Length: 244
Image (cartoon, rainbow, N blue to C red; front, side, top):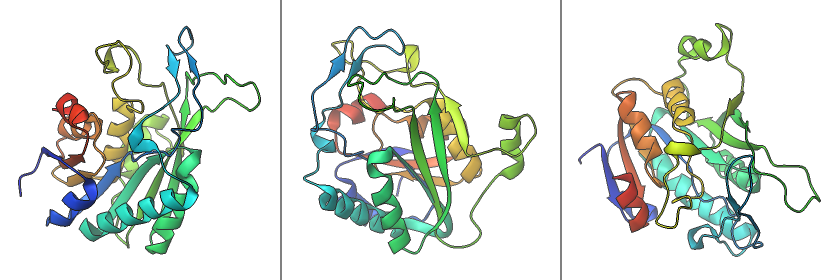
């Protein structure tokens, strides 16, 4: 099996074909937030234009549908992870519960829920709730012996132990990949430095990383820069083209 490549296609089918065992599974799956309402803020000045996420691949019938989806893909990913490996799953509050349930059913140990505190969150248009300024990364270990580069992480905290709340701006400016209309090509593109820190924390040089929801390829770029190997799976041809 070739490494450092994007495999086009459905992640459920493609994961069944993989034979390698991975040191780390790092991914940003659908959040289950599309199809709820249609709102936008084209003239937002705090973090650029804001559009309600509305993607077919992010629409689920109900809570049970999304839970079963999460159970299915994590079960397939679990088969590919080394016993000493770990999973890192990006999510919002919409899917945090389902991810935790699926991992606990697989008997994973939840190591941390890393909180991404956005320094430039999108505003709350409805004025009926608090502004959402955080997302999460669930870090969970399959068994014992997971990689944690404790000392390396101190450089991000002035030589002290790194805590589980990290501040990063939303992916904006030159790093944000745009489509033909000038809007973001992918609604949930993650900041490169954020993904690099996750990889640096939970893997070593030469390790093999799987991202079954590759999107526009941030995991691959981060892995390349940190001298890790990787395989990505993505079923949207538009995103595969951008990632390549």
